[in-house]
Image 1 (cartoon, one colour):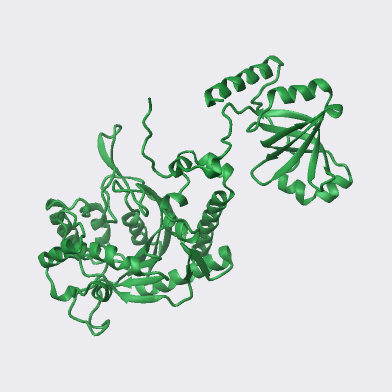
Image 2 (cartoon, rainbow, N blue to C red):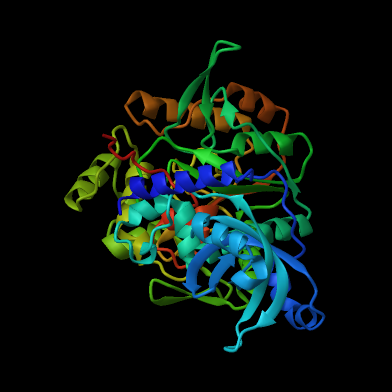
Length: 498
């Protein structure tokens, strides 16, 4: 029967309930136990024949002579209910059969008992409609071939796929553990503006909007970094924020225009301290959420045993491509990239070209947690330059590099961290260089934020900072192939409507 015909029948049932003087969407609910609580205390409650009131959605319904069985579930568990004509009375029993359907929410008052087969059950002495559903639940949702339909109707995906629900419970636990870890380390959780007069803190294309009240253009933030640094300048030595970011860019396995990010900043620390902190944080997540140090992703084991590998960016590129970044200019590097089949963004400089090569040919080869360190100068305008006099990697000392790291797991970029640039004159110069790239057509170039530069001139202490994608982290930890699987409501292309 077509869905719309079923909907008409359910509306007729809704009207019958209303004609009987019953509100099919009552404003109050009486419940003595969740289903999980009732099952946990089942022995005591059934032995004492305690009257309990349970609530939930009907998931199955079968009639057998003068009685019927149904399963219903709340947000905690599922239990069977037994409706008997002799107990409810013929009129009340028939009213239930005539007007209640799978998908309806119900309140059941009764006594707990075990059936002959040993199934824990509540025998209904009375019942109440809590919410009449007008559309039938799909019968074969689990085998649905259109994966995108699951994302569009996530509410049904959660109802029919327990594994999906568990994935988002895992996400909540992981985020909670991150908060607990940082708070124990003395970090203060803060909130910074989502609507910003100038976007900054990352290389990305923003969403633009307009504020009518002040007649000014605003941008949805691409990162909270510059505001969090203002707080460090203001005297908060340890701050973090978990919140939504927005980037008007492409969509693929690891990108969504709207996503959740963790950023935290630690005064009087550097990027090496931050790498150790990240290792410690992951150890806490694995111990308290997963109870182990290894997980499975895409059929392979990921071992989070510390210390993680550290490998220099230039060394990694040379290992997988034979390109020596010290001995090649931007034009020659662009030609090499094209020969390798890599698209180069318009106006991109040498660091951006090198990053495109790295993302396609190097990063996918990293499996266990790894820190890719010391990107070429110019890669990240907000990162401090590495002190070459005191730090030489693999005998290379003539290439200007950054005091930074990128954390990679299973080919995914999970986080980016720096020793943050706190020289206001050098920061101004970096912003000006980015503006030159923007004029050449590089849309992701960072903008000059004059207010931030002024704040920086009042003085910012040495700071280590990091930005981490929560969605990517959960995707890997929950064995999800794509980012959308780890987001409750990912961005979807609208379906054509007739």
